[in-house]
Length: 222
Image (cartoon, rainbow, N blue to C red; front, side, top):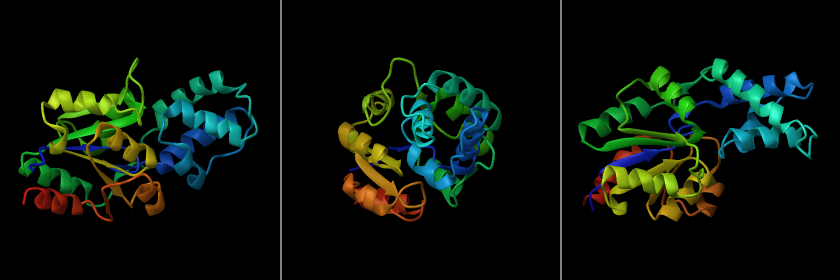
């Protein structure tokens, strides 16, 4: 078996974005006189797109009927556009991994539930242009992860078979996406969730450092 492409989740996998997400949501909640959303709650509220993040934050603050949701979506989008890069950085070892994958002629892709513009801005300003072969964020008319539609679209666009793909993420949503698309999943322990969640959602591999992805690729080629 030859691995020809690695598909990465963004938040909690490639980039540390927890401070930015917590800051933007806390600022949104304060706009409505509500309480902050700290990092520990943020890590469990995110992963299924901005709207779900807003909904969970409002419910946490007592708006169980989501009466403020429509306006809160707009406020969050405005704040996020300005502050989405606050404290954002690649996890240790990610830049080196991406260079090694390029050296091996392995395609790299980003697949996130964050908006397309948000993903592109994060990648362009933090990692750089021309690093990834494809960038997939939330797109109108395409269901978000864990629905496998976007991942299947990526595989089709690359022209590879499913056993030539690795999917790397840090949450149940990511593992479920890989499982639904029938591709090999790698759960990372440096992200937003824990080992228990990854195991319960049938991660094929669980790793502690980005460089372990290279070991998995070498193992697959034996």
